[in-house]
Length: 522
Image 1 (spheres, rainbow, N blue to C red):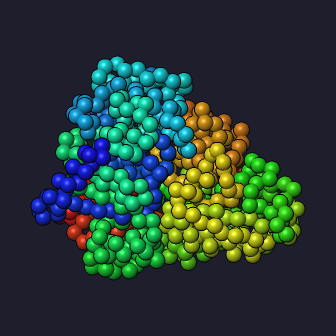
Image 2 (image 1 turned 90 degrees about the vertical axis):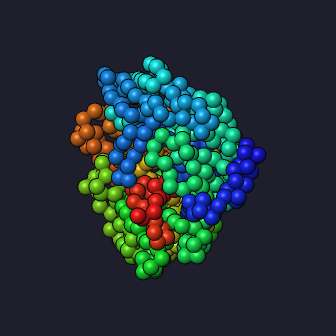
Image 3 (image 1 turned 60 degrees about the vertical axis):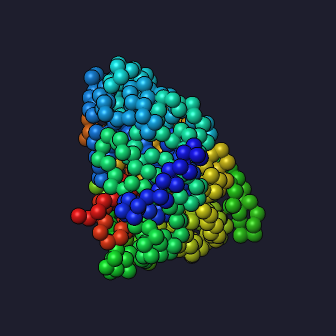
């Protein structure tokens, strides 16, 4: 594969000036942990995988379901879905896409070794895959499961020939063979992913003959690269640069609503969590985060409006839960916790911490817009109510590895969640559900929050056909979890993108910026 990649790159270098005009370079703000589309259910990885792989069900810019590798789907009884597959799709190696590839993908998802956050979340409801013929596949579920098409919009289809390919083979390119709009050329971890157009793509073909997805996690460097013309588009535009970019005649600033939220997770499962002590540095006799009053005190101590106005330059909305208003399943009953430092101090005293305690807030640097600044702004808010707070930030890859199972190295973290399904169930399943690897539940529940009532409501919602009833169950689940202070929501940041003059792009709610969806403005 290295020989293949070298040959492709040599051909690029030998291309004419006209051909090189069809090159595009994107500056992406988040690091990639793997090219294996089933290894780590992580937005930064999915941003890359959508270039190489397709899904049975696609999503439009507002995350509404549209045909992908499946041209149609229908429920043929309460527990059986039938998907009709398109006949004109081929893998990058020339092999036709067929139902056996779908079956192999569904077998591979739970097989992938050492997955930090498995895609089983989206496939757990399927009890049987039936290949009817080369272009028809049926999925059977134990109970009615109305969200199966929505869930499958998050599962990339891989070739049956790579069903047992290790993650390393995807990173090397050997197995990175999908049906997507681009083909793999080269992966330089921490630097870039180079792609070439798939001229046999079944859908609208990319305008660009070559695309370079460059990982530029430092926001000033990403903006500078755009202004210099080194890249033609960037995501995760820092709010403090947005006004400047909007006024630049060589750049178009694009702004859209987001399905994401930034929040705080607090260790709720260990008796002696790391990085938590009294003011003398002695470990506490009990875990303060297990006390709801302490978690509520932390929420009351945070001035969300100040974070939005001063750190995010007004380009965000204070959050009351995982999902912003307007998305399916969000609850109108939930409102952002009011800023109340006096109330926070009273709650800490009631919980047995009148003098507070000492914590370390761990977070990523460069994964979310202004994440480092947000962490630094939160610390003095907590100090003000008696919780002495140190801040430690790291690049995304080492941070998320340490914060994930099996180690759960931190007790108090700043992190985010994106509703990849476009509705509330995804966040509830991965953040609030009790951790159950076999069921694919609680995959991102690093707090290890657990409430049997929440688990029961999630299960009920997932089996409820009626949309209005299912939405009510999702809303009730959110309301209980927020009343428990399962986590502390901070704000929903707007999705901000910027492109060079002459290019057009429609912002997407999930925050991705695929190269094939960027086109000349004319």
